Image (tube, rainbow over the protein chains, first blue to last red):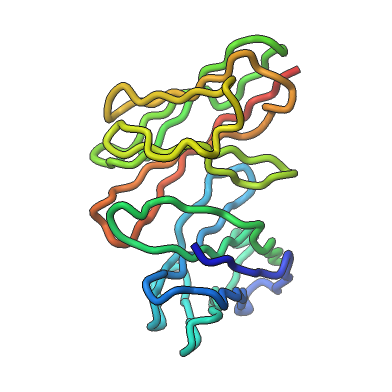
Length: 112
Length: 115
């Protein structure tokens, strides 16, 4: 699986958009970008994933650059409850490719 | 669905004792994962199963660790004998392999302290 690089920490004001970057310059054509987050003392939680098109769900938006070498997770209106460690993971999807390897992630602090 | 259920939530034991952590995956899921999380090493994948069969145990730290999945609804992670460096939060997760999303569902974790 391709390696990812994320900033160790970021700050965001409550109500503002949080934009979390991720570099994955060695991504392969069949690898997806996944985002998970881990709120303190809880298990990681799936947020969103994508291959090459931008994706949006009720939690966040995922913007993937055209060359797929980087992506940005967007939390449009961050709340205090969004304070967590956010993990960007790249891997092949589908049956037989279930293994997820976590990096160090970005610690997002949302402040009032 | 109740989600992935782990027990115990907290365990404090003395060095040398046997520790058994338990996991009940989401019904119908065919993949089960055991992760360990520490401040120093982050989230590490220890082992995972597909249809109750261990697929990859390369993350198991040493012979003191063993994991079993006797049926589709139950798995155990055993440490014998336990050591202080085994202190960590152990997470179990499950997934449905036929879904292309590959989403893993995690339990709340078992916090182990070895004195």
